[in-house]
Image 1: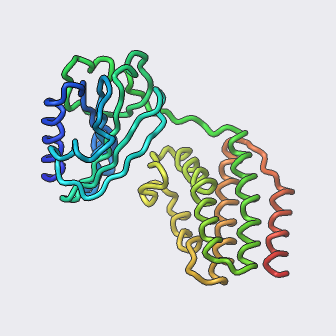
Image 2: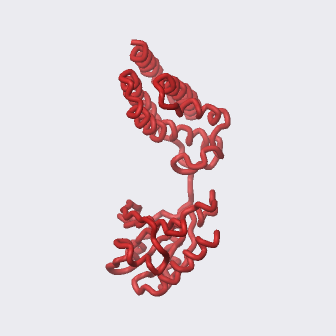
Image 3: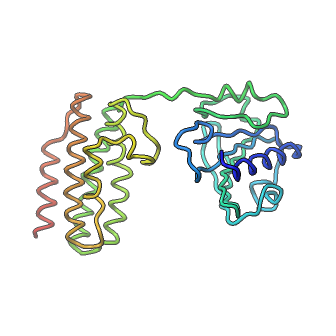
Length: 274
């Protein structure tokens, strides 16, 4: 952990010790896992608390920890219920993602942490928190999910072709971003898992776990702002998706909807050439 992060952690622990309603502080995320950590890694701090608290709702409580440059208050869903979060970027460049967990959630332990480090435990909740550790298990892709991804990928492509024909490149690239994230990426991840490689969420560090042959094709699916490049990217994306979906279907012995796929490719060509 670099010096700036260490100083922030020490201040957070000191702050927690002084707050009567803070029961425990837990470090999670990449730093707890010691996975993919670099100088820009965030701190993920869980604040376990009791009662009604003001921290997380304003920036005033952060004064004891550091000078805030910018922050954002959100909520997230967890296996135990809704959790308030406050994402904070301090003036020294350290980003801390605080999440605020009612201590009552520990009455029924839930799977959440892959790895964690307890920074502070004032009320002996370590045993309960440890019950929230869960083993990361690879679950094979189900046929229903495979079919859903294949169907949605091909369905969405007709929007790409239609709006390329209308020369709405900005809009097409936003559609393509969704297709890559929601349909292509899950199949790339599944291919990597089949090859017993650990993947990161949202395509993080994809260069470290992606098939080298597929990685070489990535430049062809990220076009510049020209009509010709976007048409080429669409077909390059189709070729990559077909190859990966065929690999997964062969591995699990899933059947691909060949007639539907060939019909969609004909339609896309007709739109492009029409």
